[in-house]
Length: 96
Image 1 (spheres, rainbow, N blue to C red):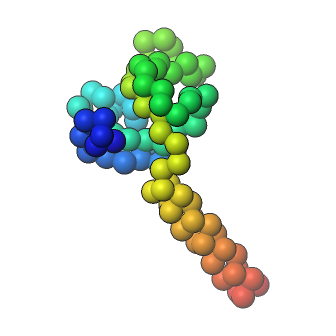
Image 2 (image 1 turned 30 degrees about the horizontal axis):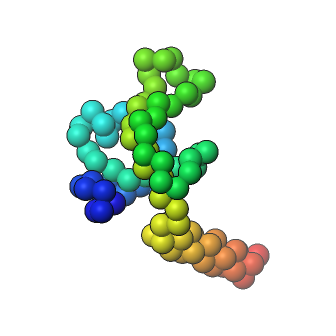
């Protein structure tokens, strides 16, 4: 994101993609990168407003989307997550 001139304070995984978290970060001036799944194309740079059915229009979050394909950091985290799941299953089979 440095090539776009964006100073980032926080990196977040998809699990934090909620209206409340995004609004909190925006309200406190925290620049963040968050992995999000959506119908975005690589290179998209737009202002996006959520459309959560559980929230009223004034409770939605508005933020900038910059779509970048294949960030290695999330691939690494996913690999560790899969390793941990495998290890947990192995421990459970030994204790059963």
